[in-house]
Length: 300
Image (cartoon, rainbow, N blue to C red; front, side, top):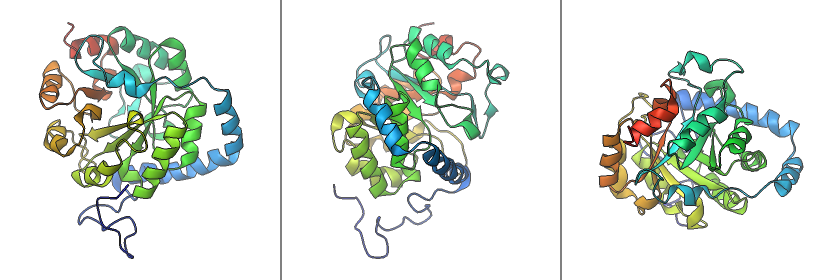
C-alpha cells in the first residue's frame, strides 16, 4: 500500500507534521504509558516465549467475528455499541469505589451490557494505568456470547499472539503509538491470527497517515476508530468525529470513541453516517452500567 506522505532519506516513515509528535513516539500521558509498556512487554516476552504462545493459539477456539458483530445494526438500535469494561483511567482514577480490589467482576458488567443491547465488549487489560487484567477477557467470554476487544497499548507483534492466546477476538492499535510500517506489519499478522483490528486515531494528521491502510490486507478484519479525546488537553469533544468523517473512505467501518452520553449523540452520529460507537467511562461511572446502556439506546 502507498503511504499518504512521500518517503525520503531523512524521514523513512514520511515527513513529520509540524506541531505533531513523530509517528510512534507519543508524548504526555500517552508517552508515559507507552514507555512503561515497553518494559512490561520485554519482561512478559522473557517469561513467555513466542513458541509457547503459538502452542496456546493452536489449541484455542476460533475467534468470534468482531467485525461482523459491529458492522450490522444493534439488536435494539440502528447503532452498534461496543460497551467497555473499564475500571479506572489515568485522568479520572478509579471510576467507582466498588471497583477497588478483587471483588471487581468484569463478567457481571459484560452480562448487563449484553442483556441491554451491546453488540460487542471492549475490555481494558492494562493493569498499571487502567486496573485491567488479561484474564478478564476469558471471564467475559465465558459469561456472554459477544466478541471481545482487547483494549491495551499494543507496541509489539508478540502482543497480538498474546491477545489471541488469551481469548481476544479483536485488538486495538493506536496510530499515535506506532510507525506506519509497524501498523502494516501488525495488520497482516492480525489477519493471519483472525483478529479484527480497531485502528484508532486521535488527530486528522494520523487519520490521513493510516487511511490508505484501513481494510488492508482484508476488509473484513479492520475498523477505523476516531477517538474524540484530545491527547494534549485530555478534553473530549464529540464534534471531532463529525469534523473528520468526510475524510473517511468508508463510514461503515468507522467507530466513534469517547464523549458519547445520550441518545441524541447517537442520532447526530447516525446523521453523519456513523453507526458504530465505543462507550466506556460514561457507562462505568453509573451505579448500573447495563441500565445506563439501555438509556443511551433510548430504551428507557
